[in-house]
Length: 428
Ligand code: NAP
Image (cartoon, rainbow, N blue to C red; front, side, top):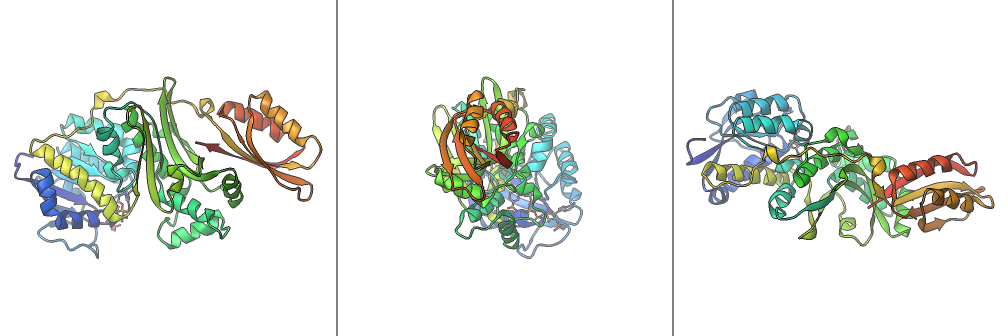
């Protein structure tokens, strides 16, 4: 980027995020110039077809996206195609050609970020990915810059709008189950035709991998993540949780202490009165616990072209500022330290348990005795009237290790006075 009078941008892909980003760059050109200290111009767009909401003018258009990363006129490449194939090769080539890269692609960063950061450093360029986590919420900048003076102990968030929409709708008065609400989410465009990535927690796991690296300076550890989705959550669990004073949210949680780092994505009971419990519909929110600032929460749209484009452009502005010699904080490969990822069995939390007991004398006594033999106590209990000799029993336990809970549940399952599966949901 020798010419500092402008920062020349190439865009790969022209879908929802790319077209919104192009339109924002055009609409806010003067604002962006005043904030970055240089003119930011889109010079090349690589797309297989036009986008109906985007009128490209004074821009070279190539149908082969690789033309963009090979264009000597391009200083910054925006990778906005998604997935890892061919995005990985595209980004490798862009970095190798000495171009900065901005991406919204969480899968690419979570799974291949380590390699790409090294490649960026080796080529003296940057790769930035604010838009990859929580769409329009500038959470990466908030952690990396706003909380730079803090030791962070935990980051917990609702980082997938689809699962939050489904759980919020299931909470409603209609008693609609997971499958019914999922179908509605699909018809509204909030869920993909194949919803697996969202509802089974993989999308949230990608985002949490990135957040953990930013918060704790540890390598990207996507493979080490414990991931559980929401497809097993029932309306009954949502109602029981409500009676006990909780909502069920799908959370990504990463925490660090002297024993290592926790990395987990799963349904979680959160107190109804907590701020994060108020986050409904497709919205996202991330709570950060740190020693000086205390608990802070960042709320906003986790998806959508404009919101995500806003984050893409914040990275472009940073790079443009670098370009004219106003440096912002960058990624430092040597600031990343290997760390022990704590196995789930060692992690402690209170648990919500729901089981069906046969209505015989002494059932509760034997349940309590098994739990207490594993040092588990019952903090709250709901017991309903017996139906056909079976009684639903719902409880919240004290904070215990996952391994103790596993052992207790194994023992309880083998009891003749317990029928069917036992539901367990961790409590925040
Ligand atoms: P999208 O609407 O599906 O657009 C993808 C674009 O990439 C399309 O122009 C598509 O071209 C092009 N493309 C895909 N594969 C290609 C290939 N092999 N060769 C050439 N072009 C290819 O996707 P999006 O929603 O904008 O998402 C883009 C990125 O932003 C993804 O990484 C996504 O995870 C991330 N993101 C999206 C949102 C959101 O709200 N949408 C939020 C946060 C992050 P065709 O139209 O020809 O297929």
